[in-house]
Amino acid sequence: MDIISHGLWGAFAFGRRNRTSFSLAFAIGMAPDLFSFGILWVAATLGLSPTPDFSHGTPPESTIPPYVHYLYNVTHSFVLFLAVFALLWLWTKRPVWELGAWGLHVLVDIPTHSFAFFPTPFLWPLSDWKFDGWQWNQSAILIPNFTVLFLLYAWFLLQQGRPALRPERVRE
Image (cartoon, rainbow, N blue to C red):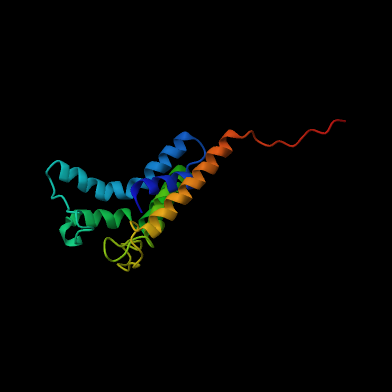
């Protein structure tokens, strides 16, 4: 899935308490891609890493530097997400629900990444098994994704503008 959609899904699912919660969940929802491919793009822009050629579709994974593969494994592991979530819960004595945007990112990527380009290593480091899903950049995935996000956010924003329903007081 595209990085902005990951942020929007994460924020909607885990960041509706307030603006800070929304912003945090939005950033955490995008973080797995930012800390793998984002680092590649920064390194390529600075001339520290070769720039992958996406002009003819997805490039062969062999042209992506090894450090990106490692970072992708770390950031797209549901096992590591669960471990970090649990450790943070123990440390703070409460669940940090916005972190759920990371787990949601991984879960959404499992069916929307195929063996053609970076299937999701959600069981890493326990297993290298991956699911051969569908490419997220196909219109059959993109259009429903954008449509549902638009409808959810439209509904949410409309709800924000409505006064809360309160039971009427019974006069005695």
